[in-house]
Length: 444
Image (cartoon, rainbow, N blue to C red; front, side):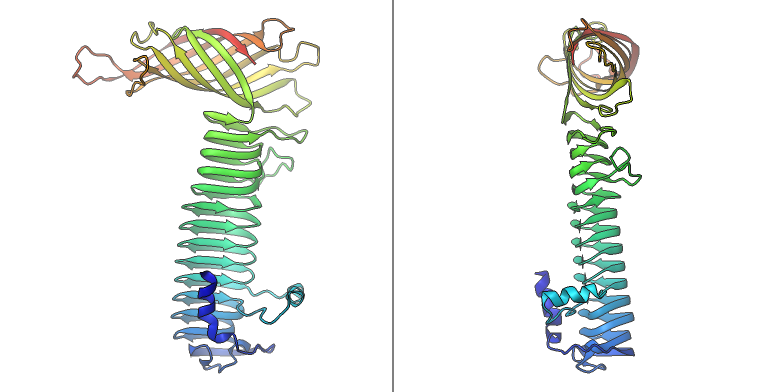
């Protein structure tokens, strides 16, 4: 569709001969291509001011070009270009040339660039590079690189790399890399590196560098959206419902995080914060607290410094899903069970001695649980316990490398609706707090 529109706007120009010699004209006025003050050979003219009542075709414009329908420049555009429908820079630049001739022309340094600003109702297109602004109700296209800003009602497309800002109603694409910001309703995409921000429902990149990567880059990238994906590696930040990080040495925050561990010696792995983290398994715990006699906990996460050879401790960041059951007589007599989430950092000892590696640990973090009063039903009213906690544990036997005994101290903050004897009476919000303790076993 886009190609058809471009052809229609310039169909009357294709037969015009192209002269190598360019003449500078201060003013240019045209009714249509070929009917203008430049005559039928408009492609050999460079205009300072160009006014086109329908569509205009010329070699180049150096300051201002206006048209009701379209502007088409063969060589370059400098300054301001405004059209009701279409602006094109670089039209017919390679007409009649073979692939080898086109390659030779490019190697000689030819570039059909736009330096300035393009405004149109439907399409802005630049054959080579754009330095400045593009704004349209439809699609902006740059076949080489962007150095500036694109605003489109539908899509922005850059076929090489971008340094700047892309803002679109639907999609942004910068194929080779994106150094800047992409904001769109539907999707942002680059097949190369992201050095900046992507904000959309769906974001996809080839890779994101960061300080934890092998290159130890100060430049990093952010993806914020419903689904974020980094194909090769993700050393920056992902915030979304689902995050896919490839080899992840950055930070993921989401409901579901999918990742692989890094592989370069001397680098640390990233941090995944979410309910479900697919990449490595943490541990399984069974313990009792002052709230519930039975608590089952499953954690996912990864070791942060497993490839650092000079440290004496192994550091893990784990996300825990917790199911608790039994009578919570000490707090809420009506509570029957609870669901919870915990985020903790675990530090294990590291030793080269046989049987002594990761023989003990300590951990700290925060746990949140929602108490439910009916056995098979979730209580809809607020019934939340939050508690910072400190854990310490050790293997039961040195030769047993998996089973640990642990104890924990916590301080509980309980926010809930106060019970009342009157069914119709509204329950008031109440806050309680108290110290807590946990004892249990863990398989790591």
